[in-house]
Length: 497
Image (cartoon, rainbow, N blue to C red; front, side, top):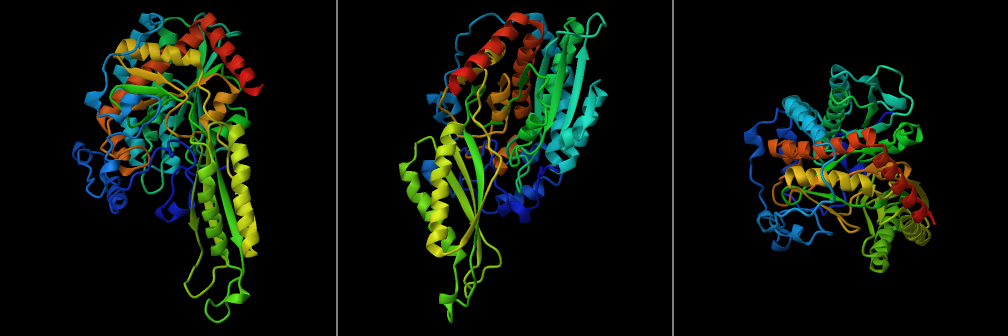
């Protein structure tokens, strides 16, 4: 299946951005911000183009927040200089300090080429470029690469197996890593997927270096996972067996937030819904009684959902837009379309909420005598981060870099198709902060600029170090791997009961 990774400007109103951090609050930007950024991204990134100050003169005072994260960490609403710098206490010493030193050394060596890889993807937010650039890069570093993996044009698999004694491996474990690479229509890499792509590569190459230098057996599988923003690329890979061989899977995601900060949040379940109303057109002045007004149906549904929001839980979201086709003020519309996203703290609650939302759509069709067609998009499950993996990651980045990592049931209302992966196998998806302009959280041109800065690159490599060390421990420490699996199985049993 061809997977849309980026779209033209004409597609903007036609795309539901279900995944990623699209639930973080969206703030009003200057009207020409999109056009300015579209021009900027045609040229290579320069320091000058990244240093422009954000113009927030149009924003009212109550949205002048420096960061876009909220929930689960009281101090993150404050400016950076008010955030406590003292790191939390950690459970244990870092596993194999020599391994972490190897990881840091390898990432320092690779940093220039990883930086260039990230910028190349940032400068070419399109469907095939990232796939080809990433597969070539992994091939050049000794990985066996399968392009267009499992019938998805822009997916790939890059694998490396190390056997210290040269004999076939029987019981060695497999660590999975994910690289996202899709961009946002009209914005480019406004969710930092150039950093995620580079981070996945960095983690995989760092683990490879450890396996070789420390005689550790195991397999690394890096999956290039397209269409996270819309389409559920990981869900397709999961359904087609792309994750079956893995004992655990790891990845990370950038966002705005306090300095030197990461979070292991559950995210929320979400599902896009397209609703089409089909009516009958007529002259709006001379014969309106002949019509069934599809636009009325859309507005009745819109108003019904607005009323419904008063009776849904605080952690649930229902949001959408109305789009038309060849509308004119003197013609009663015979067609209208709603594009909605429903979010809830978990999939079970989402299904219950979706039924209530569907009733609003059906009622609108009945009230206006219009026909209705409802199409459900890919369902993204809530993240179930593995606590054993999460503690190991937090321990490494905390002790090595003083990075604050929080874990809470609260947090930003983001969604990702990696949630489905966490329901199928032990997995970890920490978010981490990169420096951004004021009001420049994910899915904005400001964040796209931030994702190309040296500071964002440096923050990403810190997180990559923590993830690589965690991945190595899955391969090298049988008892740790057992605890990872046990936590997953126990958590799955408790949530299904």
